[in-house]
Image 1 (cartoon, rainbow, N blue to C red):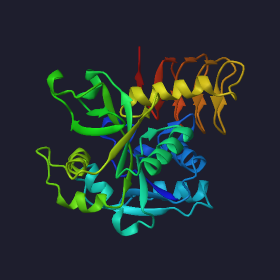
Image 2 (cartoon, rainbow, N blue to C red):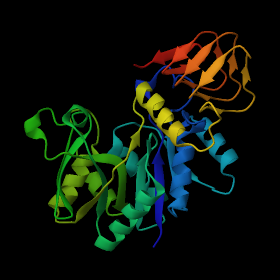
Image 3 (cartoon, rainbow, N blue to C red):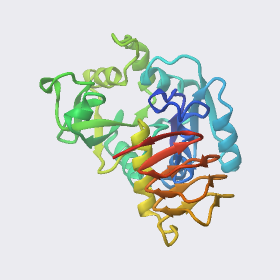
Image 4 (cartoon, helix red, strand yellow):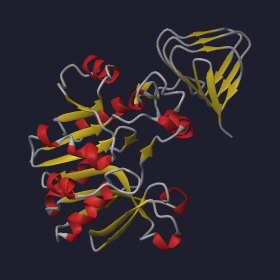
Length: 311
């Protein structure tokens, strides 16, 4: 049975400013490929051949990139005009859905193709109305995400952004990856806006549970979620260290890179059209495309005159 897939790519990426000043967050690079590029590759490997992408109304960058890079994909682009929470974003899919079940993934999150396959198989085998991606998480991060009561193979309750330890249901968080049956749309229409001015996906999940329907989950050992500049740098370094195509100094370079003979680059990623001036040292850094480098960097994320350095 086919499960179509939808990527939520309409967010502003405010926590990644100024790196997102001129490009959508899903276009930010992980080892010189946009986040959304990696996501589409993995969805295709997991046999999700029907892919839709939810984008901002005036976004031309994501469609142009996808159409150029994946010419055979023919994705559906859904334009989102209001930004009222994840539940509202999922509701935009209703009029474009051709399958009984569908996967939704955030445009700033990456999961392995094997895990995506496992999630889909579990959803169909268990005949779930919803299947959640679950990961272990400490309270320091969970208070910005969610907490889930999961036992006996089922999710029994979900709570967004627990404010205290007493509100934590378990050490499991719901990642930004879901599989829904199309009955979710009726539930989404029934929920009310939260105090934060959003339609919360947790509210719809709890309402589904309250109706007596089965909500399942699959625990993952690895989620790549890019929320801020440190995350973008960190996962670039992690993917770099796993890449078999690094040069002798552990680097990966894009196209048309110019490096002075007197400069030294180690364990770094340089995007397209990067220029590195004389007598410089760059280590453990990500230099994004079209950047002129005129000083030393270590543990840095650099783009067109702006940089952040991490300890």
